[in-house]
Image 1: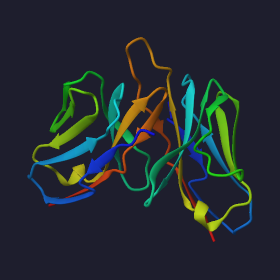
Image 2: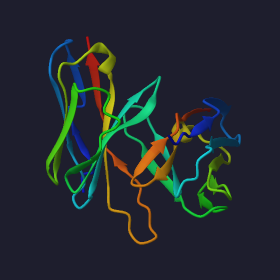
Image 3: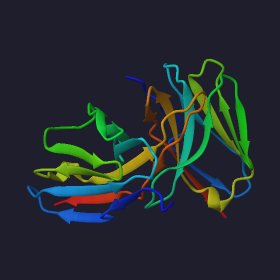
Image 4: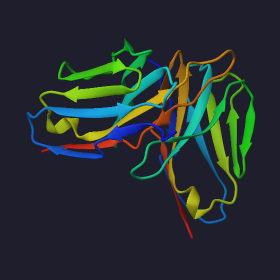
Length: 109
Length: 117
């Protein structure tokens, strides 16, 4: 069974601070995706990383896939209250995704 | 496209009753997934279909759960009889088939919040 562990589970920070969320596994994934989920809604795809060592930027968000394709990180620069939500990483194994437990981020103004 | 459409948004039912959740995937998406989300267990894959055919139902917790996809635009997840421990948010998601060298993400519906009392 492929498992993804996310850390931290919960993060509460002030507006303007930087943060990093981690996603780790002992398994190799063909690709890894990050989603953001707001209360009462389904997860929304942020990014897909495919190549080991790949770095993708989405405005203030930077995503990195580990060289061995077993881990990933999400870094947010100058967090805003609008970044508040549940961040989920998901590893692709075959045609299905395995999700981590998520990191709840709260950005206070 | 209106996205993945799920109904109802909320369902409250008594233990022992039958519950049917519905999903309309995005047109043209070949894959449909049913997930369950709880605080304790996070997002769990229950079952997924490819071209209307169930491919992997290993996540279906018990025989009380069943899912069908009679055509490309409709799927149901049924629980009969329902139990309080089935209370959760149930999500449907769809995606295109993986292309050559390209991986697609899932598009999720807004979910059905099920409460069994």
